[in-house]
Length: 286
Image 1 (cartoon, one colour):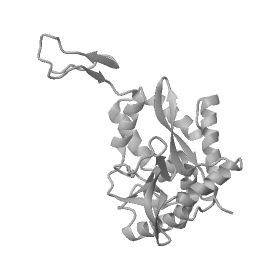
Image 2 (cartoon, one colour; image 1 turned 180 degrees about the horizontal axis):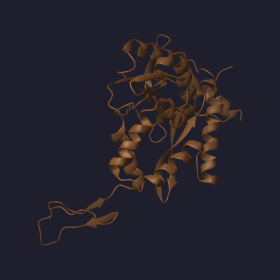
Image 3 (spheres, helix red, strand yellow; image 1 turned 135 degrees about the vertical axis):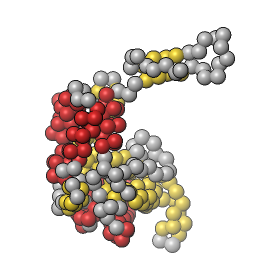
Image 4 (cartoon, one colour; image 1 turned 45 degrees about the vertical axis):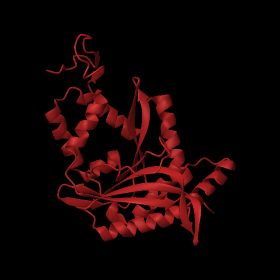
């Protein structure tokens, strides 16, 4: 029978006298922060997501970002994409919605949750920043909000109000049995107004900052929200631009939409608008 870890991390090696069919291996228990993430995934309501894997020409936006950075302004491609997503969601509120029991609440304000990786107790974990009223924020203002949150983490140990609440909740959850934790998480998720106050109306995460490679990533569910987004990397690819085959900077962007809440036609119109915003460098050029 295979051993179970008695401590957080144990290394095992088969005796030399036995045939080495397994080799050296490690058994680890998930950290508590990882366990909370597992519980949160388990508590999410069942949904039927549609996935759109977009490829967008970001060449014009990246050129505008370079010019602004050269002029001393602080902005990034990720902040720009958040700005474009928020603008498109405000124009297509069917995708800026959260389940509320058996009802659906469509919000006017686009509050975007952004996972930020920080180091806590020697472990790198994702924590949450919520960009409020993102539809009214320029790419530079989005970047400033994310930078301020990271600065607050370094000086105060917290990214902001939502992060402070989640950390307090996490400390309390250590003393709660897992079945009760799941019940409480499901109760939390069932209230659209509580979700908006503490976690925003949608989520935008990025894998492109970790690896600039072609391809897409997407989550398995949108949870109670109508839509979620994963921003990939921008890489050079052959692209037809103005009738010519040229090399352009192409951004991969995955859009996950809860088909229980949104039909295909509204999703397609949203994706078309989002493409136009990104490829026109909306909010970056005067």
